Length: 322
Image 1 (cartoon, rainbow, N blue to C red):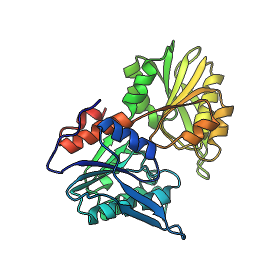
Image 2: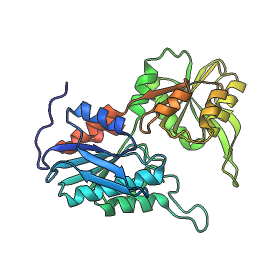
Image 3: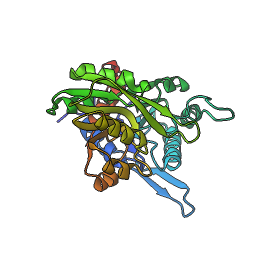
Image 4: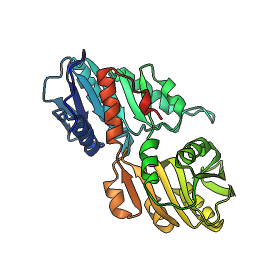
């Protein structure tokens, strides 16, 4: 069992959780060998958030675990109100632990008269009183620069690579679902001593639907693992898996950090030639796993716990960035 956390200039370490992912917060607290923070998060009859801390946190180092997953707005507002309560209760430092950062996909003005939502959310988190952010696999790494407070940006690649390395996959090829994901797929392939392939994909300018054009690389008779960061409606993964099968792949799997799996995603995965979909638990998946036995869930609690310990002890977190 890990040793109890040492004292620092920030006082005791406290782990709190919103309603988004209590199970992950409990796993992190168990890894750190600290009790969960005592608080009550409720709703008024008109659905407004009611929050009260049930213990003294003056001078403590608070870590709030709250991915901004669906319902995104509800979980975001919960996090902001909880941060405000911690600030007004004189916590020495407040770290927003956001395993999945919602509103990350609108990170630039790529069309006329659109918002940059990722920057707006970064602003309101800092305005609420957060002193720093701990997050994982941002949709675009430059979102770190949208914050005026420190950001520790972790990657779940070690967790996924460790799982894949323990499987018996002959003739393994890591596949990037588009040109933008080639760097990620290349990193996976290098660590797994696997081949690399890339799918040439185009998106419709009207509705954003993906169309597979070509498979670049030799995948005939090989086990292919499609590596992505987010799987939302699973349209891209479904078409990529079918293209790989049509090109002669013997077996197709997929892996992603964030299993958003909204809308028709589960149905598409079930109907696709994907044998297994490997995702981490940055987003709660209990209900989705119950509907689809192809889903394999990996925990990032240890990785986040190690980062929280380093932040609390004020030691380097850089070894966890790769």
